[in-house]
Amino acid sequence: MQEKIPYKIYLEENEMPTAWYNVRADMKNKPAPLLNPGTGKPMTAQELAPVFCEELIAQELDNDTPFIPIPQEILNFYKMYRPSPLVRAYCLEEKLQTPAKIYYKFEGNNTSGSHKLNSAIAQAYYAKKQGLKGVTTETGAGQWGTALSMACAYLGLDCKVYMVKVSYEQKPFRREVMRTYGASVTPSPSTETAVGRKILAEHPGTTGSLGCAISEAVEAATSQEGYRYVLGSVLNQVLLHQSVIGLEAKAAMDKYGIKPDVIIGCAGGGSNLGGLISPFMGEKLRGEADYQIIAVEPASCPSFTRGKYAYDFADTGKVCPLAKMYTLGSGFIPAPNHAGGLRYHGMSPVLSQLYDDGLMTAISVPQTEVFKAAEQFARVEGILPAPESSHAIKAAIDEALRCKETGEEKTILFGLTGTGYFDMVAYEKFHNGQMDDYIPTDEELAASFASLPQL
Image 1 (cartoon, rainbow, N blue to C red):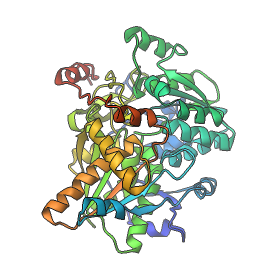
Image 2: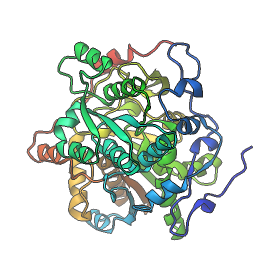
Image 3: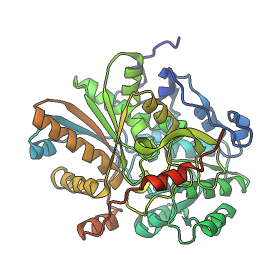
């Protein structure tokens, strides 16, 4: 049995973690392994080596080590913007007239504008340590691409970003931030790759998806010597790096004797939600405490609430390993709405296993309701939130209003993953009444499920 190691020994005096927490070490039911689509057998480190960096592969496959020390070079970078603020939303509480106490962990206080930098610098560091020339990746709304561009610029690595076409067109300023950091940015699907050309032939005029962009980025990495592919969400290694969010939040709350009753995070691929809940979920898994944990996803891309728990390709072009996750099918291309980085067909295998085990719940919310909550939050808390984060804000407000009705004095913690200052086209469409609440039909999902791999 794994000896329990108190997480506090891995905190500096300023409460910044010195080790990442691996929630898999405390999971009785481990997430299912990645499978080789050709053989149907678990992927080995050797098979993953052409795609990922060596050290990141080790982290991806490690289900047993509870704490993994953060290299000093990464800690030095983190100190530019960490620890990030844990804020009590006094003004929002007053506006809602709720007895609930609302806290949010704000990850937008860095140049990339989001939590994505926590993993970007780690992945870029290991690529540099391995002696690589550069990395390739995909990005949805652009936060991950921006963060990786910044990390690569800092370390002197080349960075190639495939940006979902609808976001490339809707978010030109975030695209230009990436280029400012020296990255090349290509709208996906593109004609640059064989898989991009195939997708365009099958879906003329498509606005793209994260699944499409992943396929192109993987092909670009594996066809160039000295390059590897890096991913901003979904993977075990990413949730590991993002655990700094939850470790800091828990340290701050413990310091003041605060225990959250409800923990809420937006969910697309799972990086921010997994990072926020990790130490709290660890306590829950070990039987030390209990929390209500809620994943909030867009109604237009409802992996948890309407997906199937099955092995599926992580990308549209079917060039990646198979992952067991809640999925809408790798061929599912979401409507070109503004859920941005939440427009991914699947969910983290770690979170999928925890959800399937009943350790957390999930809800889906329509887009216009999300932006109403974003606007309400901005007006009273002074931060313009990213559309992704606003899904969590919507759920937190609803929970606080339920407390108002029942008189319960719950403590609510949610993740504010970043700022929305590059998402003004979305806010403009909302204010002009041009935003639709697209929800896929059962028939559309059934057609996508039909293409799930038959193992």
